Length: 319
Image (cartoon, rainbow, N blue to C red):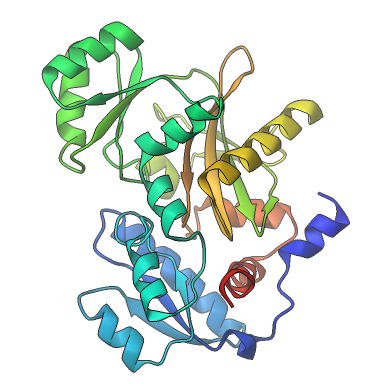
């Protein structure tokens, strides 16, 4: 990362420039517990920096809280539906409250794994072959078309919730039924065998990629948030040309979706060295196991500097 790019990551604003900041966390999605941890870390960092913070565990009284607390700006650290899918962004737009992260369209699009893939495919950006499952017959036809192994995932969930690797039609049907408990739309994707990478973006800059390793079947919920044996490599182990290819691919993928402020892209590399985009997160985790803070540290930002940079991007984007 060049000195100029590094300088762009930092906030030069004073704490009072942000006004009264509502940290929106918790919520009602399947990722509530992760969001509570992320929110607590963000609240501590902003408070320690001298920012005027109002912590709001998002519930039915949200509108009243936002109006009664005289909020100037919102830091969205809600994960999943209700926070990452454009609905919270739409409410804040209606209220005239600037907020962190991507806008309505990009948030809604990124939360929908199917439509994200369709956008990438339309631009010739590689993403694994897939099918939509709505019946046992779909499972049978998808297995014939895609082969095994496959990965099943709810189309509108994060944190690997409801995901499963399958190697037979029977396992596929069972995994589809399980994923359908979380979402009415379920995807099945071609399994990409090879290393996994995650790449964070912050203020239009791509941070150092992270290579992930886990003894689990894949980078599931336990590996992300609970396990102590998950491996993270920075530098990621790619040669210079391949790492630059990954960085350029991430930038292109985010531009296609309209990502703003910050985000994180998950990528697989197959045995032939080709990269495959999986998904993009517009409000990634900020827990002690989370990946964006790791990437930021590799770029020279501590956690408090990272949080202030995310907040500063909302000033640049929305005043």
